Image: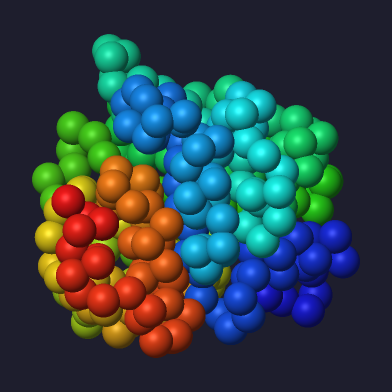
Length: 271
C-alpha cells in the first residue's frame, strides 16, 4: 500500500488487509452469474454465514447477491463488488462486459471493486477499454480496483505460460489496478519471476476444484512459497461441504497461523 495514495483509497485498501501483514485471502463468489447456483443451500447469504469468522479477508460478490446477505456477516470481511459478467451459455463466454459501476459499489458500501479481463479473447479490446474506464472512475471515487486477468482465447495455447501471465499482470498495473489476480504458472520459480515483474500485489487464482484436501493444501503451501500477496480461492472453498472449516485452514496458511483443524476434519470438509 502506497503512502502517496489519497486518504480514502488508502483507507479502503487497509480494510482489505483485515488481518495485518501483506497477504490476502479473497473468496470470489461471483461464479453464480457465469455458472449458475453456488451449490450452497441458501445461496450467497448462507455461504457468508459459514465464512464469517473464518479468517478470510474479503469476498467478491455481484451487487444483487447483497440482498440476501446479513451485514453482520461482513463485519470482519471486506466487500469487493464485481462489475463484470458473462455466462457459460453465451456464444463467447470469454467476452466479459460491465453490469455495475463504481458509483453503485460506493452506494453499497464496498471496500473495493473488481473487473475481469480475458487477454487474447476475441473481445479483448472492449474488455481492456472497460477496465481503463473503471480505473478512471476508481480514481474519482478513491475506490481500490482488483483486476482479474486471465490469458484466454483462440490464440492462447498455454494460459499459464509465464510470459503471458506476466504480461497480464503488468497490463493491469499500467491501466490503474491496485491488486491483480493471476493464474498460477505451475511452478514456484516462474511465478516468482511474474510477481517480481509486476509493480502491484499479485494474488493467485485458486484454479479448478481439488477434492483431496491434502493435495489442495499442498498446492496452497507451494503458492505461498513464492512472493505472492495471497490467494483468491472460490470454488475450492464454497463447493466444500464445510466451507468455513476449509476457509479457516487456508486462511491460517495465508496469515501464517497454526492450522486449527485436524487432517481428518479437513478431509471430511473437502468431500
